[in-house]
Length: 112
Length: 114
View 1 (cartoon, rainbow over the protein chains, first blue to last red):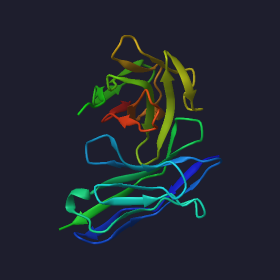
View 2 (cartoon, rainbow over the protein chains, first blue to last red):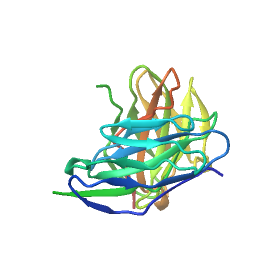
View 3 (tube, rainbow over the protein chains, first blue to last red):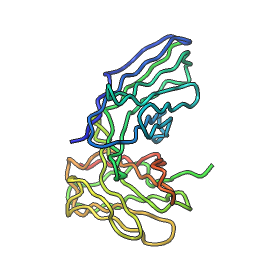
View 4 (tube, each protein chain N blue to C red):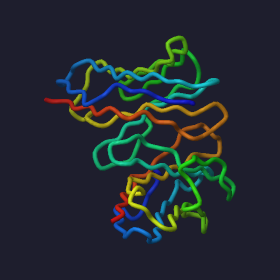
């Protein structure tokens, strides 16, 4: 079946460091891919998305490119801030369906 | 900015009791969802709802669960007879009429079954 695999956390970085959070997926057809972020005490917020191969989603300095050849959607940011500390979830929707399939989440801690 | 709201933020119940979790989706949205996250585990899809009927459900969503849109604003999840393993964070989400796949999530209700 369809699944999403994320790197284990927590990821601890210093402010202004480069961030990569790996995400790979297994899916039939052509899924849409998402990154959601959950700040402490809040719900899941859509960070970015990509709906077809080679699309790049971007928002708030974060980027991810839909790579069909490697079935990946890695999240990157050039310079993280303390305010980026949160849990990041990679997710997909199956072709023709709306249910989101989530990865296990990666906690990011950014230290000043 | 419009947002999805959920009540209560925390619900404690005894095993075997019925609970109703409430959600107010974004007002012009037509698709509604429930997800849950057991502590330390993945966020899991439960059910989606459109045009007053269930459009998708997972194997988790068995006969103990039901959903309802009792009026024009609320969307509820009922668990008829709670089990210990129902303890989790329950998230409601909604998406708009265009079906852009962007689901907007509420802050969640933490359900604790004793």
